[in-house]
Length: 436
Image (tube, rainbow, N blue to C red; front, side, top):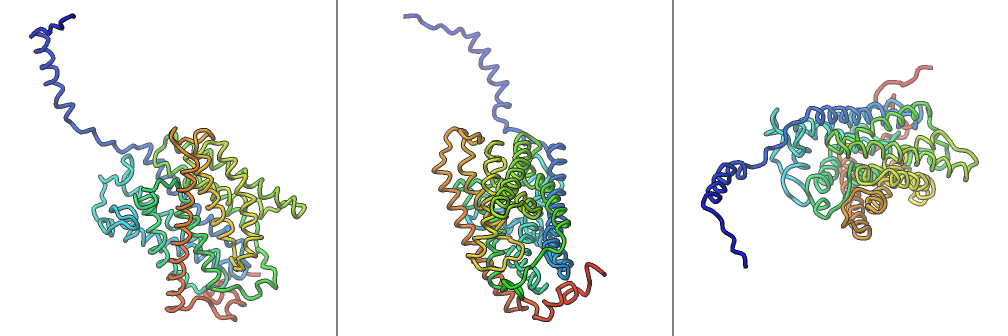
């Protein structure tokens, strides 16, 4: 047997080397520095999401309404965006992204207390102020989406009161549960950019609102024809462009994940556009521009939870399935539900969000081109995604019911019949969109 001989000289050298390296070994890893590239991308993404809402969503919805209600739709989206942006900074951000509660955060950052030029928050390579602004745009567009369900008949004061209440008791808790380390995050739910937090949440609230506010005068007897499909097309195009900030910005960095989300956003919307008009061509003999615009939005909704988790072929599949699903959502399902969801918030955002959230659990699998780890199991993840969808539907539905009922008690939900017939532009705001 060989005997290993270690000389005192070697031991001494080894000890000297260890002593020299000890401070480095004991030193904690340096915190990532703020990246100018990441910061620039996140500022750009924030601007793109603002573009989605004002003017994108406002014009998309405005064109779908009747001419006498055009300004009221623009006003509601514009003012809801403004209100929620302020509420987000006052308390929404703190309750969504502070603390370790299962359902809600805490007040550590109320009124942006403790946030300064040097703070980085949840993303270590961008200033916390940028993260706050980016997440605030998500909150604002989520609440603004609901406006499309009760358009053309709801009191302006009730719209703002509902926005305040529903933001507080539905959007903020769900944002914490999914992105702030709460219940759904701990369960492993995948939601890259807001399939549950934004779209299913808003879609369900819209459906509840359509039921509670009641149908427009003439619903089921008159054709409520969009007054300007040109504006709707412009709005849909701005939504598509802005969605790159929505999805690719959710990567949080100007890196590979942002690139994947970017290309997936293009592909899913394109596939859903063609899927929608294909269904129209088969059932009605021709595809419509409104169908193409709606299909694009449906595809954008569906890819939102999956954007950074699936491969490009998975994105195409999700879009191709979402298009026909949303056609059913605004036709057969809408008739079954019997709600006057004026601009099909549930049919597009609710149905598209559900389809996307569930299919994320399928196409995120590496075997199908997804980017999740080798231990990813479709069945297990699909069950997690299903639970997150069901919880979102229940939470948003109850929160919306409470918010609408409080608004009904305090200010009343809808304008009187004469004001509705005259149009909300004149009766609520004393203005006209068009002068003939």
